[in-house]
Length: 400
Image (cartoon, rainbow, N blue to C red; front, side, top):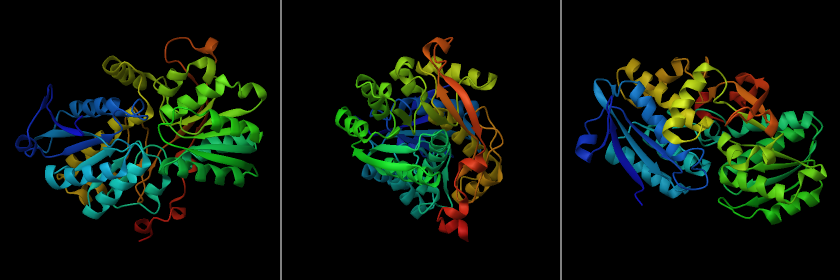
């Protein structure tokens, strides 16, 4: 299996090219995601389609030259991610790495990018450390982070009386950060954490973890994981009839593809936080239906976010008249973000995009009127409330 490939996009065509041809491109964007593993349904090939849409809609060119696109599979391994990023920057002349689902991979690439003063836009990874101790003048965090998920979903649940928690946590950087941030929110709202367990990424059997959670008698069993791990945990919780005994599941990071895989019968009532839902308005529906025709599934917020991030980067390159990283990064911060995904968002000095988040509940089967009609909106959380204040993030660059 090839770890990555090079693609060049014109206005109407996509073609494979060699290194010499690719070297002639001005803006060279690389999408690095989990292409075949447990996170691939929410990122993966759909992220590549979204990036292609963005480049095609931009006209296929920037600064008078065709836009190059590389894609790579980090296989959820930090060493592969950092090695790939280093090669892309040093050999291929990549000007921006985008995507980076799996926080361990994202943090590894952030380290390489920061050292080389290159642009990375983390769309899919969630660790709030990306705008904290691992922030960078040329690094951005585009959609969500563990702090926003914890505050939106965790805070709402505790305020509703669900004040005792047990965590089933993915054993890598994202899971650890999500549990940490949610614990802080639970405790700050006078809740209690009764225990927790770590589960390996890509785990297929959650039975022992679920039984421990059930035995804790916690009102909330919090799933601090993502992708196939979340789907498997919710399905198996249904088999054990855990929720029928009065305990509730909280999916701290759940995507529409997870709900589709689980089914409304099992997922109904689940609280979750998203930044994007395909059926929000006419604009989201038009883009999402285009995506569906190409991909066969409605977009997750991560896949739609790839389009938004790539488009904003290309706008900044054009406005700055260069691909020089620091100039482009400054232009990105100076430009408001407005597209079908985002309304009037902005980028802080620490790289955090401040956008509204939305708390949803999963519909009952009888409430759904058509395929992929899965969410009821519970509340809008303004971006200034959803995300950690910059002064609390320990970002050295932002303090200067």
